[in-house]
Image (tube, rainbow, N blue to C red; front, top):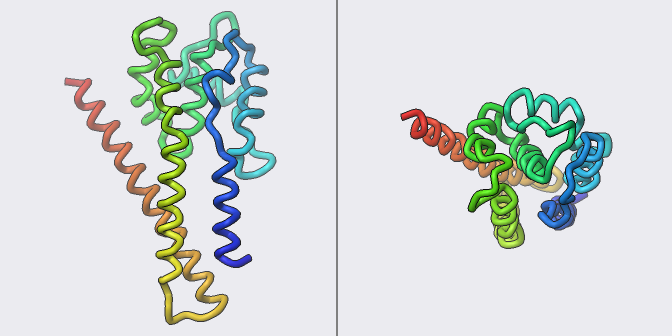
Length: 196
């Protein structure tokens, strides 16, 4: 597979990714098995490998133990629980549990209260940027891919392809690293501010 073929496959996979829309989440409370089934069905495109688990009972129990997720009411999980679980799913790939706890603290302190900005409103607002952000991301990935094709100009053939692919991966990785560091810094600043 050439780098160009790999890039096309990457774009195909990215275009299949979608966030769970707020209206897709049931308005009724669910038992744990129903929660895991819903999450595994709706986030299956995000799995890296076929046998990867999106969400298990053990994960949910650990999130509740670590105060990331309020406990269920009579063994049932509300729509707000589901929304938090979706946020946790995405954020655990690049943040520690401690950082997620800190980030979620303002959200979980208002859990279950109908206020001006409830969790469903917050989730809806964030997801509303999905398509615009995906377009920006695709343009950025294209620019990085084009730039990687200019690297290692003195290499030839298969060796050049491998080095250019490595260059592309490093550019993507550096972007992830910087954004992760920015998020961690925001969390640290936020924590210091609330401790005063």
